[in-house]
Length: 320
Ligand code: SF4
Image (tube, rainbow, N blue to C red):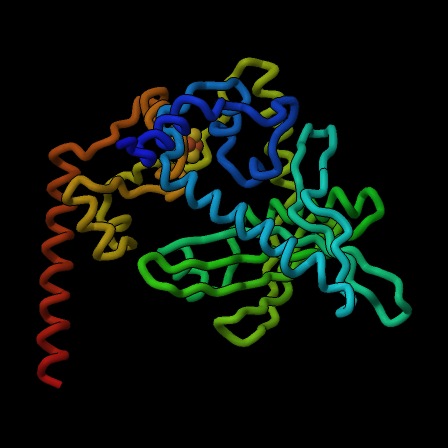
């Protein structure tokens, strides 16, 4: 009988075309991204590490949640003074050329019955990323840039500078879900975005004071535009493999060291591990995707130190 999983996988690899969205502008998600990655995307470089079936499934779960929230909540909350003004609200400008779609534009009713527009951008997170967010209570920087750009564009068009990033957090292998909402405001005087409070089903609401410089990221895309025109490759913002030094190893977790020693991981910026041009970029830059004997020796030594420390910790715990 037919294996549908294999067929879907094949369909994704063969049929979902590269650059199927409008290629005349950058995506809002390119803000905060690696300039080289954006340069490759614009030039339609073939992805050396395309998204696999499981990554697509995660996107589809996010898409399903997005339309469920619209159908079952936002479009029916008018008696609470919350109105769905727009869904997949088109956002964009020409300097630099950026286009995107804010998930929802809500209208929050005020005492005088006027309505204040409020942008909601939905994100889903799984496993490690989800646990990290619950621990650190901080949104991803690139998500702040994304919602910040929507707020800048809508502010410049006289709509609103207020919105939020709304996360659905899923823990792998456990039926645990949480919602986390980070409220943000765009500050036009210095082109920054401030995250000023967080609400969640998992912890009490808190005030925050986290500011990012959106203007700088917009300038980075303007530079990529210039690079494209000049046919000059844009700079790499991240490193897929950090130089192996005692100091760098000291900053890594026990598990990361173990994974690196067993050949399952390169210790570098996480953005590169998820980059669809990872192998291509390493080849272009003449960087190795493995550890040489000298690097492995240092890694092994660090691994032995970590194992001994863990053993001592366990013995101390048993004695207590
Ligand atoms: S592998 Fe890293 S440095 Fe290279 S393009 Fe991707 S994110 Fe940028």
